Image 1 (cartoon, one colour):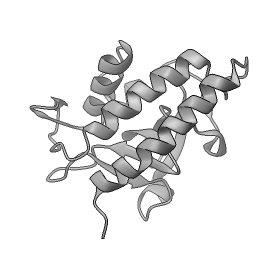
Image 2 (image 1 turned 30 degrees about the vertical axis):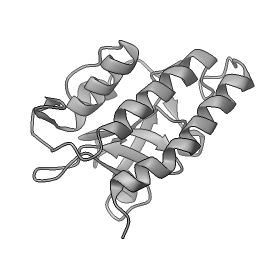
Image 3 (image 1 turned 180 degrees about the horizontal axis):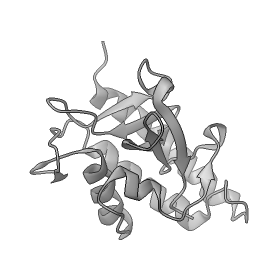
Length: 163
């Protein structure tokens, strides 16, 4: 059985390739296609997020030393990697003005939201159908698949905050 950290390390080349493709592909005006600047920021976001895999979960946590909950992880990663300050909880982040992205058009750095009717959980899409998140008490920051047992049934939507 592979560890989340080995999965994270395996995805780094793919994440770099996606970012490079976006950079070389130029800028599009479509909200479903990130700009070259956004691709660079997404690459920074991915390195930060993947580097935090294994950090303990802690309700209300928002630092590597203190641990993370889901929104604390997302807020920390985006603040450190891009300077973007996001609201403190997943529902407030879900309410920000950013375009929704079709699941088939997800790009690294997009925010993915989960819940039954409203967003109660958030993660960062890293590519290849995977996302990084801080899932629950007693756990650690980890990488999971969008089509995983729980996540496929609770996926709500994604938003692109890097444009």
